Image (tube, rainbow, N blue to C red; front, side):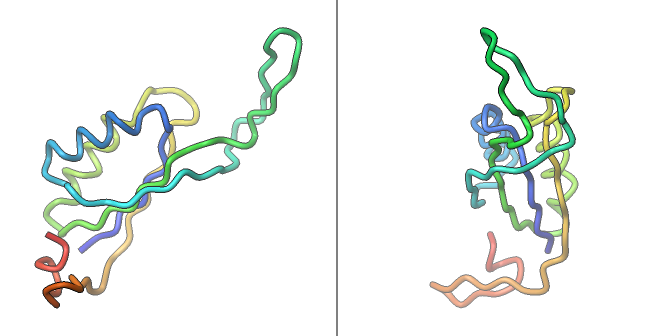
Length: 112
């Protein structure tokens, strides 16, 4: 099993959620987060300078079986991407075990 952590633009969240449901990834958690990115340039709007160093994003955590990893990552790359600076990041790590509390199932059965 793999844990996928994705930091995406908030404006792309609905599109990402819909795309994940289409590939049958129906369970994940998400949070609104603030981060600091590589972009150091501020924006000026009506003569007022705004800092863009603190970036509002959405943080998703998705646990999938090994055979869903590539499909899920490719879906995130397609649905969350705009080809612009600030699209986000995806991190993948191993999950040793997963349990469903209600049924006490473990492994892949615990996440499906």
